[in-house]
Length: 115
Picture 1 (cartoon, rainbow, N blue to C red):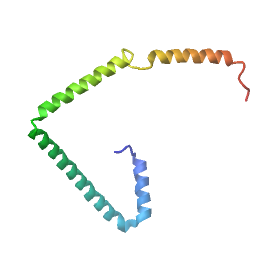
Picture 2: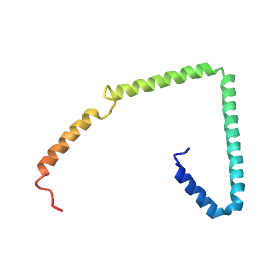
Picture 3: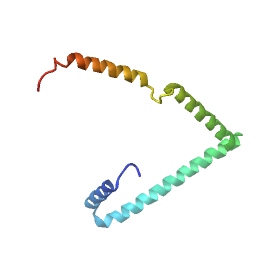
Picture 4: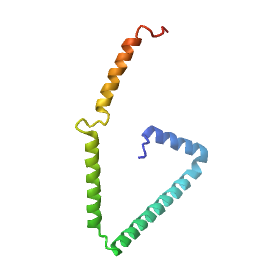
């Protein structure tokens, strides 16, 4: 849930309890619940309006799913072309960087300052 762990949630609830007091916390939770329900209803209304508009213009859900599938296939194809067999975009470059780093370390080894 939003990347918040149990301990963090307890800490947040403790801070809320300290700031608003035990009398206001149920009222705040009730208000937040109503706001979340209204947001969910508004989101569902917008989705249904978009779907009705798409159907009115001759775009059905099967057509949209086909387009989405084709776009996802092209994205996956582009990713595989970029990443190649290694699955790492910088695979060969990283190896070369490591070689240069080792060369620099071997050259500057005796020159490094003593701490």
